Image 1 (cartoon, helix red, strand yellow):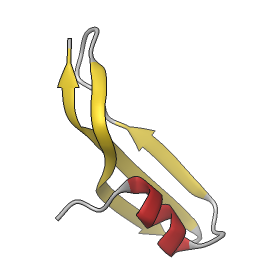
Image 2: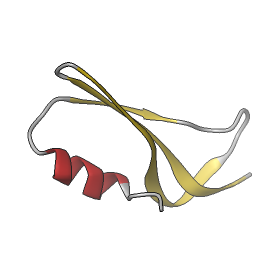
Image 3: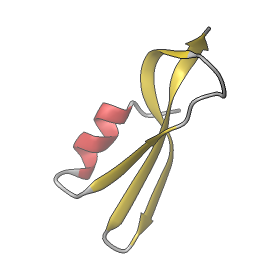
Image 4: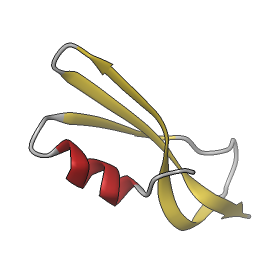
Length: 57
């Protein structure tokens, strides 16, 4: 199950987070919720990689 990005940030609290959004190549618009695809923690740094549920041209 992919967790919505808002819920993931809420669960991580006040820690600094780097958010990256994956998008397909070209002119696409993200549709639906932004969901966490990967969470990477190294020391004090947290990186969330997210993507939309679907994309439209």
